[in-house]
Amino acid sequence: MGFSHLGTRALLLITLTGWLSACSIVPGQRMVTPPTLDETGGEYSTETQQKVQIPITDINLALIRQMNGQAIREPLAPLLQGLFGSPAPYRVAPGDVLQITVWDHPELAAALGQPAQTTRDADAPPGFLVDEAGNLQFPYAGTMHVAGDTVEQVQRKVVSRIGKVYRNPEVTVRVASFRSSQVYLDGEVGKPGAQQINDIPMTLTQAIGRAGGFTGNADQSQVTLVRGGVSYPINFNALVKSGHSPNDILLKPGDMVRVGSRDENGVYVMGEVNKPATAMPMRNGKLTLAEALSQAGSLNPNTAEAKQLFVIRDSTGSNPQIYHLDATSPVSMILANQFDLQPKDIVYVDNGALVKFNRVLNLFLPAINAGLTAAIVTK
Image 1: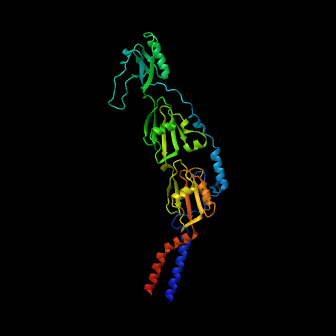
Image 2: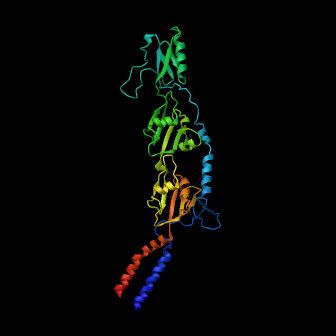
Image 3: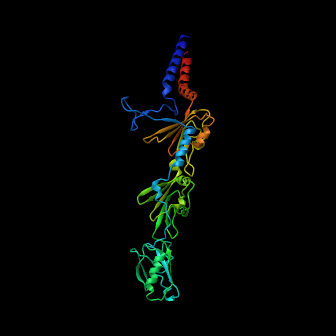
């Protein structure tokens, strides 16, 4: 009896000591008071250094209205304003093939400039090729420099030259093959690759349409236009909201357009949710807190502390922010459905106190059982 009593007391003492020491090693994730960081992101070692506390902002109606108001008032970025413009006539360039017809002069009908090529799609059609120097050769007109001219200007040059041989010639000029100017599309479009610019002005939406349109995984808020070594970020949804049409963005020869993937801009949902996962934004690039939680299977009703729902933003940057939502509030889902997340945000749902106790208890149950068994065997 004495040994059993002493063994039981010792076992309880060990268990109590383990409970007190295990408070810092509870299994699973949990939210604690945010640390104090220095300006480089490292923790301060002395109290004499200047301290910067990461703010925790409550998600409420006032915050939602402030964020929505900023989004509505945000003007079109000056960087993008230069992309809009009026269509200009197509100008001939080296590599183009022209079809020139002089009416009522059959002797010129056979003057095609080059033989027909039908063996490969890349071969130019019959016509008069504009060479690398921008020159064009035509019977009785000699060599003419046409690079940079519109079709109408080329037609007037031909009439002026052959008018010395033929009286009042009627000449028709058209571009038979546009080969000098291309734009390139990459990323989440149906058919990535080069698209030829022709006499119909090439707009951004037209180029994407010719490339097969957006794929199902395309993020329409992450479109990048690269021109002359400068990258222009384009958000289709934001442009439309600001009253601008992406169809008014004119592309130029050599432009490259890349459509980003939704996979690149996910939001991490962690903690006490049914399916921790990376939540993908919608095709327009938007993702609300409610949508992210829905993709993660919502809160775990058995373990989640609904009052402790956090959104961590810019966690790897110089200005991290933390937002807090009490999900037990009757208006919490309304707020969550209006709170827009940003790429790489972290949504974290903390666990309750009872869950922490149960997890600590589970750590020590094997030890307790082993101790009781040893006591019984010894007795």
